[in-house]
Image (cartoon, rainbow, N blue to C red):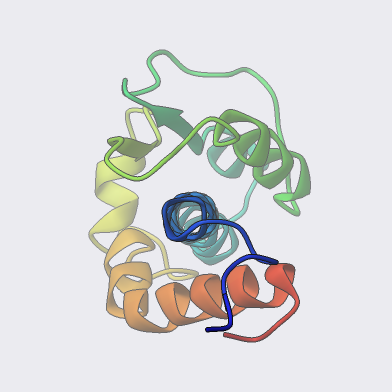
Length: 146
């Protein structure tokens, strides 16, 4: 009788390897989805001085507090900072996207002609697409498309 699993390790090792790859992929999807949400909210945000865009922040396990005095008209620095903040995010974590400026709520509910439908509500309407892109990117990183 031929041993088919001898070269690939024991069944237990194969299951452990599968679980590890699956967890890594799921964690990547969590991070990419959260970053996609934040990036969409940032780019949908109205711009005057850039302070509003600069105040979008991500937090893992705790909501970011306070406000920033910085500006970021194109949103690039804000998205980069969020990517760093999300590096530890994994499946099961609570991830927050917040903007603590006092005028964030009025802007979300139509007080800007640049974003009359808000930023968060528009982004959440696109959540299936954001999630799909995150899953696709996680599959691509593995390199096998599965």
